[in-house]
Length: 182
Image (cartoon, rainbow, N blue to C red; front, side):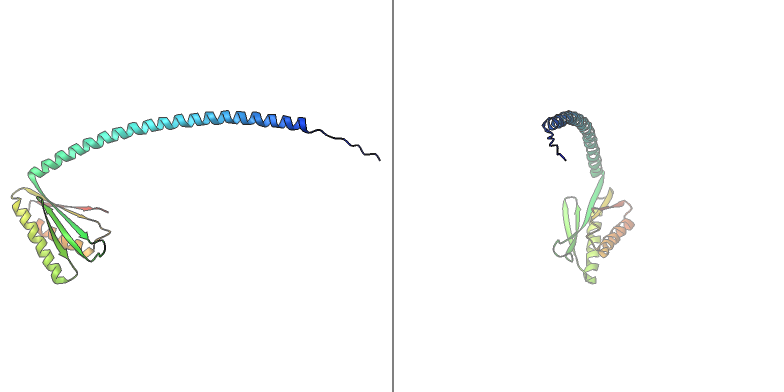
């Protein structure tokens, strides 16, 4: 038997394969450029729309702020506002106080777990609130109670709520609102 030594030359075939791969890559690059351009144009359009909507929202918020300031100034002329807040020491939550802000004055009343001290704190809170309400005369008084429900004790919340209830019962021109800052 005779062996045929046939040598197949693969160089032309390899050249053809490489040419086909080159054309595929060139076409892919063109498609990628088109996809990139389309994505960029879509992003720019969405960005323009977002900026337009944001500008409209900023204008609306500024108008709302103007209305709020007008309302607040009108209320300050005809009303008295008392701001109550419960503050706790960041290091020791057992050290807490009630802050009363009214007519530019701030009063702090300390709180503790001792029942006699709590009764004294309630009495002091009622006295300070009554003084501010009486100093306001016949104008309407708003008591705004600000607190963070995640960082206050229920007994402290109840103590302040009781004082507000007492003042609303005694004085007919007193209104209250609660604001949870959580």
